[in-house]
Image (cartoon, rainbow, N blue to C red):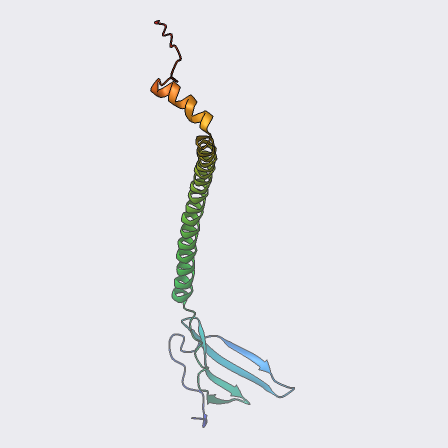
Length: 153
């Protein structure tokens, strides 16, 4: 592969692509012919002191895969939207639970005030004078010897 080859006879068309001359570290000029194929540069031959050598092509560059980048971007966008939706649902549930908690606290305060009224009523029922007032009011009872006057409306 690295044998020295004379220049091939000229053919019609462009067999080789562009050529460039380079000087490396002060050495003699080297002329390089290369071809561009699919965006990659392939080194075809080089000439040093009018001798042509075939050169192994450059290792092909790995073509960029925009499919994977696009997949990652779309997946990230979908994940972001999903997390945003979950956060919105959680936020609405949080507000709903706060309203329910406020309503429950209000009911608890009402029940506690009702408990206080009932305990006061129980304490009054242990007094004999209060029982007498209730018996006169609700049952229409009187003591012996009392005269009742009823007025009609």
